Length: 189
Image (tube, rainbow, N blue to C red; front, top):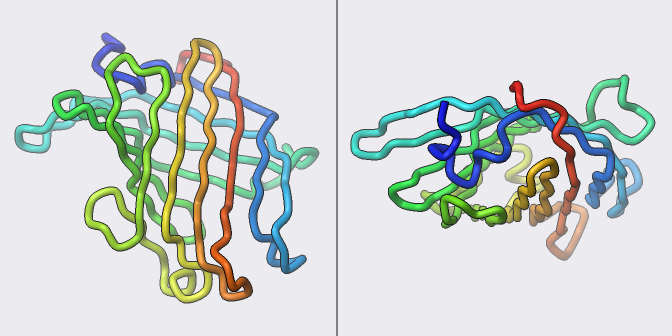
């Protein structure tokens, strides 16, 4: 399989691990924003092409899980499943994912096929690159935007993401940030 078909996603194929994660989010138990250092494992498996009429996509099926530092052998505090997709004809890279709290995001952006860094965004209320939540979250912790910057550099991959949401206990929007640098464990996904 020729990896150039995956454009800027090609360097992500494989299994990655990183223990430099930092989650800054609202901690419901404490009623305030706090920090959680974490360990993460992510696997990207290539597939494609997928034909949508004249559109042809190549993608990565991905799964990620994050554990609080020191709890790596317990249940993860965060998981995601989804797809990262590349539309070469339109230079569009996008990520479709769901978290088990009942939120789904399709974030996207423009990138060159050889880009080692790219950004994807989503906004609430738009039909392309948007955000959906279950009824409870929509009423109590409504996500209004999502932005992520990805950097792929050979044997390492990092991300810096911000999810903005309106929490019923806060008068101001909350900036939930996550960042980590992961190292390639295996190219076999």
